[in-house]
Image (cartoon, rainbow, N blue to C red; front, side, top):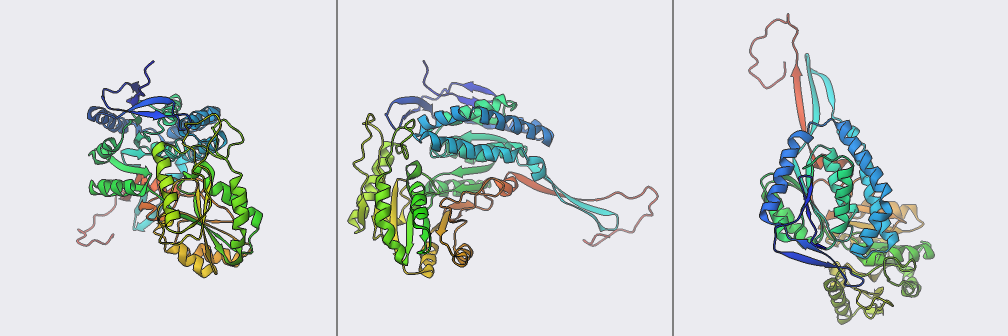
Length: 498
């Protein structure tokens, strides 16, 4: 059996001619799942050229027909929901319940893409001058590119290509080379939904593939989710190549806990937000900021956190799965060691975690620090593991100053019983997505995902109305239709409409 994954180019799954492959392993067992080809220059050229050719016809497809493709697609995604979640769990290591949530949040964006006719509506003003009307129309860009990460193999590709294609573009998807299997199945189902050949392409690869796609003269817009260093590279490179770019990058998300909050609610929400998905979320809470006497809850938080255990994806009692790779585990363990060296108090150490029956998994138990300061690596760097840092401040003023001094601005939350404190926090915090008594405030898709500062590079954000603007151009038309018997006018030598 050939375990080398194919590309999807011009409506066909084709075997790569590249001699370079990357092995992908089950993060819980190290079993070889497949080999991922690093796309050759010829394969990338064929994918982009095919998407450019398909665009000439797809842009002319009536908007309601494009919406019907999305309607069929969302129905297929729902019918295959659990199958997709199972593939995702095996690919990524997430628990089955978490994998189902990943798939469902992607389906919600496809449902929004079904509404594309109303999202593409322009504006009209009659008689902007005598017998002159002006109106705007929305048109697609061309070939768009999506570069997606390992931590949400279904949701983030579904943030990108359905809405871009519904807007009339064609799309080249480059999924994470660490978790390609879910994206392959998403493409198969999109083909079943009626996607014409060439409208959606999928090519595998690493940095060289990404660089080729973002610098290709026929690609118009680049969407990326991943780490800050890679996001900065893509943003600079694609902007230099005069592309439209949106890069959603890393984070350091704070939860502010006021002493008037409900203790049990706070602790239960912190558990899932800090170590769910093994902390491998760009919206994970990695810093708990206890205000005043709320710091007294840390011991109970430690005890509850110690009861959360990782496990295999099909274990219904597992709180989360393994880290994505051995390298990822080693990196997180090194950061934990740095926290100890820098003087933080290690209240719970997950480095010796074992899972019965899976001795080779990339396991890391829940880890908790207190007495963390802003100069420590565990505070300054995104850990991307099941590690929570606890800090104490005296009041809301200090909490705001702490959060606003962070270079990241993806998400934050405040837990409080005070409407005044919550309103002040949402108004003054320098973060793009705010939760009030909600730990991970990822917006539903009729809003947009709005990270700020180093967590986002670009002008227009993912999904929602901003994504429609990102994937389209606005054309404004000014028209006069004179009557046949209208008297002629003298030449207008000014810019004013007369």
